[in-house]
Length: 162
Image 1 (cartoon, rainbow, N blue to C red):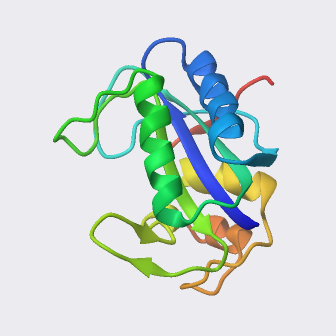
Image 2: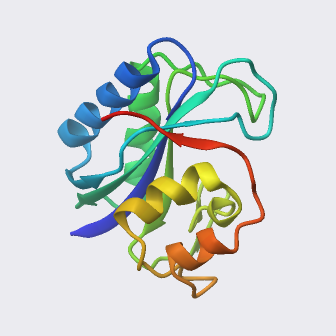
């Protein structure tokens, strides 16, 4: 089984319901969710919007390989109402990103692992540190909690009620 960490985000519609729906679909289509963080309300990153995001991290165990999982994540995003656009940072119903896949380092046109900016984003690091503080980033060779402690991003990340 592969140990995978994902980041989930939503800032359109019922953000809480969108993330809950994505988690249900992940369990049906991708594997077993071992852990998930609480939801955090966060400022948009990379663009301006009046609507904040809800973000969450999950630990997934799956027999899928990285490319199979990526296809499943894109399908779940579509099922949850996401329409992929040419704009990189924009509002979305659901955004699912693979952060870490075992200790793999992958560089292809379709997939870069570990996620190339996970160490730069508090909205990713805070939920991830909640469920996996001691996991080591395979490129930076530092734990998630150490990456969070040294993260220069100062954007607001507020915990939501469970």
